[in-house]
Structure formats: structure tokens, C-alpha cells
Length: 121
Picture 1 (cartoon, rainbow, N blue to C red):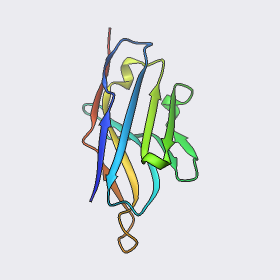
Picture 2: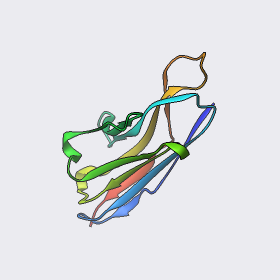
Picture 3: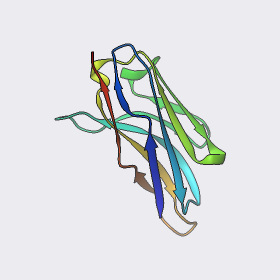
């Protein structure tokens, strides 16, 4: 079983910064990618940023130049540094891991419980 524990959400003023972290634990055979998705009230969940096992990062257009994703492979941890936050960044942010729990299991997605980010003055 793979567990994802997120931290770092909260309330911040427009223009401020937050850093989200997600630590994966449990039975993990191989990680293909880790990243963050978000869902605002009344909207569909959307990709924020992911980083592959080869350290290729992909960002949503709306966060390019403001957010930076990084990964610590030794600790199975992914971080999202969010700068120049805007009210439209307000959402529940969920950590995602795409990988294999064992060498015999299929590739699948695992999700954290989510952490709230609120950008407001």
C-alpha cells in the first residue's frame, strides 16, 4: 500500500509564497512520476505540475514562471514552491504518484488527501 502525506498548505496574501511537500511511503517498487493537481470549488481537477523519474517537469500554463516542482528521489518526496500567488490559485491541492507498488502490480495513480491553499487579502 502506498501512502502520500502532504504538508504546507494555508492562507497567504496575493503575491505571497507557499511550499507544498508530499512524502510517499509504503510499498513502492518504482515511481514513474510525482506531482500536484488542484481542484477549486465548482471546477474540475487540473494538473498543476508533475516531475518524472527522469526529472522532466511539466507545468500548467497558468503557473509557469511562478511555481517550481522538485523531487528528492532518495526520500520519495516532491515539493512545489509557489511564488507570486494569485487568488485564482485558491484550491485544494492533491499530491499524485504514478508508479508500481510491486514488480507484479499494474501502473496506477495514488493520491494524497489534499491540502487547502487559500490566496486572499
